[in-house]
Length: 233
Ligand code: DC
Image 1 (cartoon, rainbow, N blue to C red):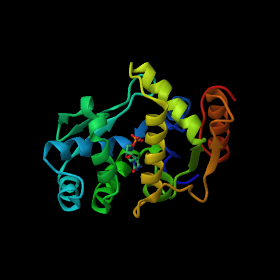
Image 2 (tube, rainbow, N blue to C red):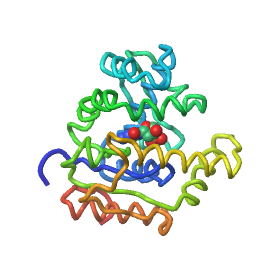
Image 3 (spheres, helix red, strand yellow):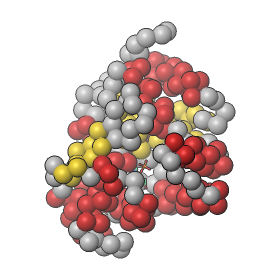
Image 4 (cartoon, protein in one colour):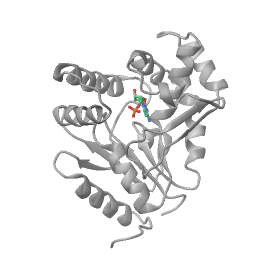
C-alpha cells in the first residue's frame, strides 16, 4: 500500500454504508468521514440563503465561499454526525424532509461537487474510512481499499424503515419505496460523479450477509490490500 490508509465505501441509499463504516473505522482505528454531510450542510445553508432548485450559479458560489466542517463519532450508532457552515452549527436541520428536493439538486451541481473535493480530501489526509457515492471513483481514486455495498431496493427500504422507527418516525411502504427508488435515480442518473461501482472495488451484498459478516468480509479485503487491522485476526 502506498499513500495514507483510505478505505472508501460507496453504494446506494440504505445499503448499510454507515453501519459498516462505523465498525470498520473502529477496527482500523481510523476517523470516519461521511461525505454526504457536506452536501447536507450546504443544502441547509442554501435554503437559509434563499437559493432554490435550479440556481446552480448561486449554489456554486455558496459552496466556493462557505467553510464546511463535519464530523461523525464511530462509536455512537445513534449519532448521524454534525456539521457547521462558517462556524455555525446546522446539525439539527441536516435531515429535514422538506430539504430533500434541494439536497438532490445541490448534489448534482458540478461547481458544488468541485468546490468540496479538496475539503473532503483534507479530512482523509492521514487516512480515513470514507462514506459516499463517488468516494472511490472521484474523490479518492487511488484509495488503498475500495468497497461497494449493494442490496435490493426492498431490503434497502426495510433498512430505512428500521432507521426511521428508531428515530420515532412512521412512514408507509409506498413512501419508502418511492424514497429509495427516487434517490437511486438521482444518484445514478446525474451527469457529474454518478453512483458507479469503482473498477477496483470489492462489491459486498449486504442482503446476503449479517452486519458482523459484512464487517469480517470488509476487514479481510482491507487486510489483503495492505491495511493494518487491529484486534482479532
Ligand atoms: O449519504 P447521504 O444520504 O447522507 O447523502 C446525502 C446526499 O448527498 C444524497 O442526495 C447523495 C449525495 N451524495 C453525493 O452525491 N455524493 C457523495 N459522495 C455523498 C452523498
